[in-house]
Image (cartoon, rainbow, N blue to C red; front, side, top):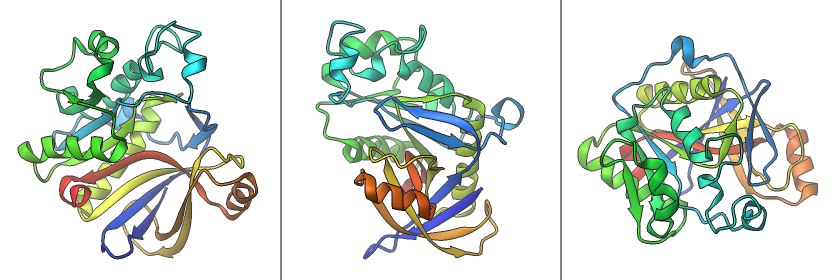
Length: 264
């Protein structure tokens, strides 16, 4: 496993990228294609919940892009994370179960939007008290993360947080969460880092966010470190083909950091 490190211009903040090669399939239902992860880490054998870890599940999105499709399944306006698209579990159910492999349920905050209450309330009725963070409106990803960070900072200002979308489908939960556990170890050793999980791309998918790695930096944590040269968000297909050929990675949108650098 490789880790890529980026210093944001003008801020001095360090962002790392954990590269996940291999054959384990991870899909996003938002039309982002297929992501590949390394199945070497198995949560059933090596992962235990660690009590300096927190998890955020970003479940406040409206799901507008797939709305016309998902309304054919259930004739209402519920976003896709609250739908049973695969079997009897919603995508939110699956995400909560997956995260519980390495993060205690009482330290997993589900960030939602008040107007979706009739959809999420039945799904979270069995959750620990105080773990639902309700936003008045959906203002996007960054405000949701900040809102959650303020909650954690008040109780545990130096703990580590992993941020997850609520609409991923993962074929091998243990292997995927094994990589998240490695990211937690990285930020334990280097609390100044923000670690972002990236994936090997196997096609020139223009609907993905891409990460262009830079120069390799020697390091003793989780393999090699390298700079991130640039982030590309949903590039045109011609550019996606160039990025694929150059070894660029897809952005999984899963990140891990300790509270101080993440909230700075």
